[in-house]
Amino acid sequence: MLENFWYAVELSHEVGTTPTPLRLLGRDYVLYRDGQGRAIALDNQCAHRGASLALGWVEGGCLRCPYHGWSYGTDGQCQHIPADAPGTPIPKRARVQSYPVQERYGLVWMFVGSPDLPADRRPPIPAFPQFESPGRPATYSRHVFDAHFTRTMENAIDTSHALFMHKGAIGASNAPQNTEIDDYEVTLAEYELAASLPIKVNRLNGVMRFVLQQDDPEAHKSYRFALPNITYSAVQFGRYKIESIMVHIPVDDETTVVKSVNIRNFLNRVPGLGHWLDGNTAQVGNKIMQEDDVVVKTQVPQVAPYSDMRQELLVASDATLIAYRKLLKQYAGPAELPEDVIPAERVAR
Ligand code: FES
Ligand SMILES: [Fe+2]
Image (cartoon, rainbow, N blue to C red; front, side, top):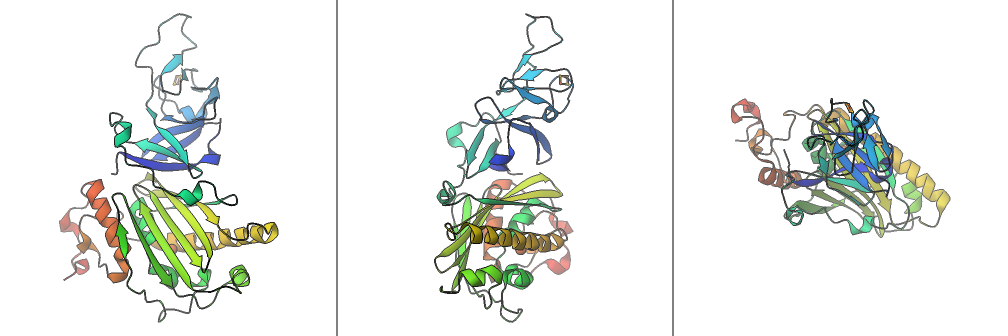
């Protein structure tokens, strides 16, 4: 649905010389590193008889199919057919598609779209300079959602559910009377949106209470969404900041793998306490994703209804979602659902 974009598809450290299968938007690819350590992305099905190249191995920088041993260069062209006599020409069609790849912020980005689109006309990889060389190693997390990626992304930039649904996990006030969201601005750029809002935190949990006890507890949360599959969130308590890039990998219509890269700008010099905080943050993050998962997979329709906002009833605090759907509408073409399947009670009057 969103073509001609750089998709973040994997954490860099999870791609090595052992081929890794990647299922994206219902298609199968294989990722691996060549002899120089460059990340390579190819179609996964061998041109010979369709075996999975991800079951093969890297040999001299080429990827060898496990079935009859055809060997593919990084451009996807077959370079060796073991069963042919030496000197036999290799058919031109003995190739698989290869895809442009870049690595930024500890993530592998693959360009999904027309091979004819000139490189300088590709939309850019979003800018996250603070992730280029963080003050301490990033931490990572992962969750598999049984939901469409438009829904998991919306969930990640949905401002009003966090204090309501995750209040236990984030140590927020005892809602619901204290969960109203003040009006906030959403900035829309060509391929992304951003918003920042104050959050009300009456009670900090565990280690955060200890770390921040001397500091101004005024808290802000910032959100970004960048086409096609990135959300970002930051929580700032005074001068302390925890930031995450979340990659929503659309496996198929029913499954989205969310992987995140997390950094913070404090406790860099207190390894023991830092380690403890990382563990605590990961635990809280996992609890939050579990809580999200239970609800997000029940949403109807399955694909966020970006073509026709009337299919849901969005209110002022949903400003990020309204902006998100505008971007989708602009770049993704019409949504699948025809208008006549809108349940009448969900049409705003
Ligand atoms: S199927 Fe790959 S070499 Fe035959
Ligand atoms: Fe959530």
